[in-house]
Length: 328
Image (cartoon, rainbow, N blue to C red; front, side, top):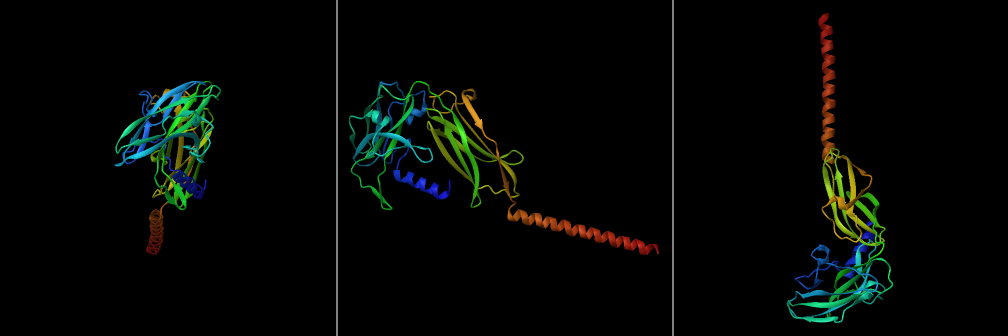
């Protein structure tokens, strides 16, 4: 993906104005799950349910006004979707709900909060009796009402926060994440690592990405990555940048590996290696030219060696002449 297209995607994401997952912000309007599962840390920031067809679940959103003034807040549900790079995001309010967003019922969609006040917002999830096995994503959106949108380049932007909701319908649950792409490009003297992970399963996977660059001695000179969610039946793209410029240059290797939990439907990355699936790909070789200063040092050293060699040869010749004339 070229840099221009990448900038456009990032710009579009900024215009949407979504934060996923959203947590309570002391500086504004925010929300989070009110009843997280103590055995699943991910439920502190997103709603996660395992519900069969025809089942229902009642829960609550913890809504807080971090402002110094009274505010009326809209709370509504929308379908989840993905961006061009495979990131989880949310549809707009005006878009038709055709999946899990349609399953969420919020009786009270306008809540007035005093300054610094928080409230619990009730909602119910009702899964249709006939529904596909696997993961379905929705979002509960929190947005202040009656505020003037910010004008940006002719586009009206209104900030909203959204909390992801992942509903897993049990059945033949499976996940299979593979490294679909690993390329390295040079741009303006920097190295761009482009990675794509393909999730062929029907549920999300939290994937731990490990990207390292090693020198000829095996020392790690650069690393990046982290735990990121890959959505079911989607390809997620990542782009990392390094500014390696080894003084003496030489050959380096870029190594990429991923790991995720074997059991489909489980979230997060555990510490127990036996519970993880780990995959890697053939390392990529990097070659760096010596820096200008290094080339100057090398050139100076070579010149010194040549001058010494010339001096040594001249000295030998003079000595031979001296011996020759001395024998006469």
